[in-house]
Image (tube, rainbow, N blue to C red; front, side, top):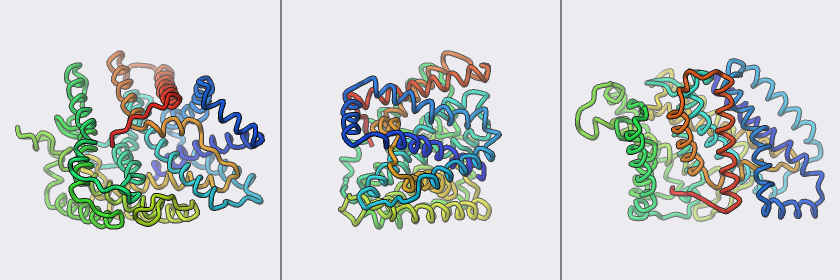
Length: 438
């Protein structure tokens, strides 16, 4: 957990430094030049591609290095990045104050940056794990433990729940609307089953089960949330109740059933991990709805963002509390298990996600902070980018034996893969294409 804490901090600071450097260059422009530049960027495809390429070099490439050939230097990297960020803040902090208007804009910027960071990190890892250059300790754990890739599914749910319509208090969904909106996810789930079976693509049964997958989990969470429709201020109470009851049932023997390799012929036994873990993910979603409403938004029915001063201190406090709770649960109740989505897994996912956001709030201490262009591009198509990443990952695995390639070739493939994702996001942003199901 300590290494993951430092790794997440390092990756967040890389994004922070890129945005700070970008803002320092933009500050040299006058308001007139800045407005003209904004118009040109909107109309010029070349500027989109150039911005995406520059951000890949400044953000994505260092992230890939930290996850692969520099993985054994995580502690050193974290110390170095912390000192560098501290220097930038102190060097540019003097005489700077954040107004109410800037705080609102900065909070929205930080939310987008956090959501994109977690999504893009997941996209990189799903391909990187297939190469030897990616440390095995970062891969998904079989039963108990915390690997970097274990937080992927949980992070996707957290990133969506924190800014969902429920968190903003403006949604009164019903079962019919929920089923209608989740039909694309269900279709994607069946499409994944069809394609993986038709090309004999290797799927680890112990992750979700024989037929279950990530898209069915998202659809299940959305449908369950619509059945019991509560105001955001009460969602957390229901969420914690579900998580505690589910954890008690796990300790009474359900955990042994879920972790065993024995499976019956019925649909529940065949997909026991995916079906039962929905209760953990559902509880996680509900807790995040209340957290998002409390941290980012105003009273129920008011979708106006709070100021960043309000959110920053509370995010840091809640993040540290979740880390403390995770350590206590992991040592004295039950170890973290992504496979079951138990209570300790939920708290560590919350801790890591809030940690990324907390680090990004440090940008408020830097005058003229601007979000990186790549963040704007990916923010419009998080699910679309994830789908494209899965397609590209499958194509790479079907075209070569990833475990036998050299470190240099693996690194080149990962950078090329990330660049294709970035260019696709830039093109979709340029043409106003947005793919959203949930």
